[in-house]
Length: 266
Ligand code: NAI
Ligand code: 15L
Image 1 (tube, rainbow, N blue to C red):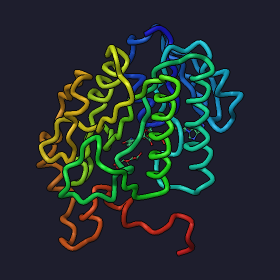
Image 2 (cartoon, helix red, strand yellow):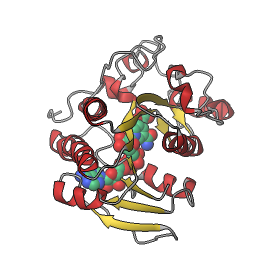
Image 3 (cartoon, protein in one colour):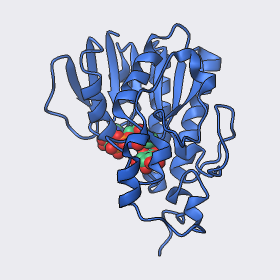
Image 4 (cartoon, helix red, strand yellow):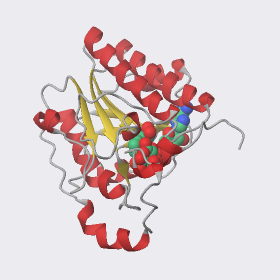
């Protein structure tokens, strides 16, 4: 890859990708609302609010691919979701169309399907059942990507990331954990496969208690190497068992599914 744009570069995953993808692209163009000053060789930085179309257009010009991580990353006010995720993702796709960028890694989320029961095994064709306005905004992003693929041929990986952290922090994450290294390997597969089309991928490591079936994305050649199993004893001893009847245990999205509407007064 020659010149790849990484949005959301100042965030948790952005920082992890800068480390794990070091040297992969000739130039990694980092962008965020928050300034980044600790640039490594091969990195450049451009501040940009994803809600500003002109700024996004300038940002995207001359890039060969986009890793789109930027935006509101948990439930929040409609205003922040509107700006970061709805306008932001539209601006990325529309700028890509105008500047002939043909491949995008879209950081979707497991919260697109968070209202499915933990007893249901999901695959790429399972219906969206968002558990939050945040999840709805990721569903919008996935549909938008599909529209730009069908009409303009822009290819996307719609990566329903589980929980991408150095290690799983609770019982739920034993099912949803994605290691940072497996995520970086997925990025490489997405940008090297001959034909990507518009493909849903569940972003999880090789976890024994996974709820997700990625067979329809096997053609990407992505083989996660890590597993939450190595953290099982530690997690089980530190995370007390919730009441068996707690509603958060029913749903894949956990507390995202059982929380009230974000903007309600308590
Ligand atoms: P984060 O909240 O740490 O990073 C998001 C970054 O986007 C921040 O640096 C923020 O400044 C930037 N941002 C927010 N609004 C913006 C705007 N209007 N214009 C420009 N930049 C803006 O989130 P994290 O954990 O790094 O996640 C990255 C992406 O992956 C997000 O899209 C999130 O929804 C998705 N994801 C992450 C998961 C995880 O386990 N970390 C799980 C599922 C999805
Ligand atoms: C997400 O979509 C969030 O971005 C992240 O902060 C975690 O909450 C993750 O899902 C999860 O479900 O663990």
